[in-house]
Amino acid sequence: METETKTPQDEMGFLDHLEVLRWHLVRSFTAIILFAILAFIFRDFIFDTVILAPKNPKFFTNEMLCKFGTFIDVKTLCINSKPFQIININMAGQFSTHIMVSLVAGFIIAFPYVFWELWSFIKPALHSGEKKHARGAVFFSSLLFVIGVLFGYYIIVPLSVHFLGGYNVSEQVLNQINLGSYISTVTSVVLAAGVIFELPIIIYFLSKAGLITPIFLRKYRKHSLVVILILSAVITPPDVFSQILVALPLVALYEIGISISKRITAKDESLMI
Image (tube, rainbow, N blue to C red):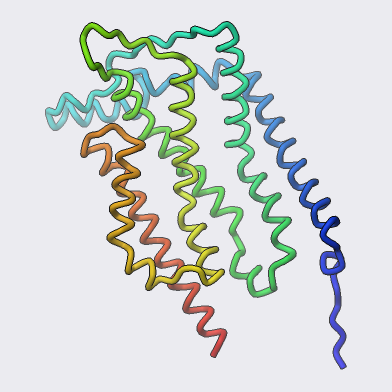
């Protein structure tokens, strides 16, 4: 008669699991705060070199698009050629913005560790086969998030800043962009892009749970394309070039998700035979 070896995790009660989760969250929050403090200290680099850079003509994306536009004789590609001035109208506006930006930077930098902590909590509940298939989840999730953040920062943000910062309903209305408005636009776009690029990971776990299949994804491919185009129109300026530039990687991520779902379904079916 075989005896089943129980691990300490198997014998833990509900409150014990909550205690373990609490410490995972505490360590994650501590990492975010530590990186946020670091970002707070290096204020000049975070604001002048990173946050405020996309509105200047010397920013990498702006320079490359302008060179390409000059080459093909399309001057409209020279974006952010006239940087606008950002103002602050609140007494504590700059200080509160400094704290908020530091926290966002802390979260972005600490994301791989935060995801690893959450994964460490979930992992003991998985079977050995599930652990094997989910190997590398932390690495690929972090990699996709970083790629999404970089894509949002170098592609979406300069286009959005150029359009929204220079848009006029009348020549009598002068644009004086508030600091909080500018920062919220940049951070929301960057974080949204990072989350959107997690699509293959989301499809992976939904496929493992049996909630979606490659047949389902192929069936609604056209519908997903419409959603992607709408999403691209929302987070970018309303011009075809910007929408296509954002939509292409999202379509590629969806196709990668179909391939991932197909492999998972094939493995699950082979195990059932």
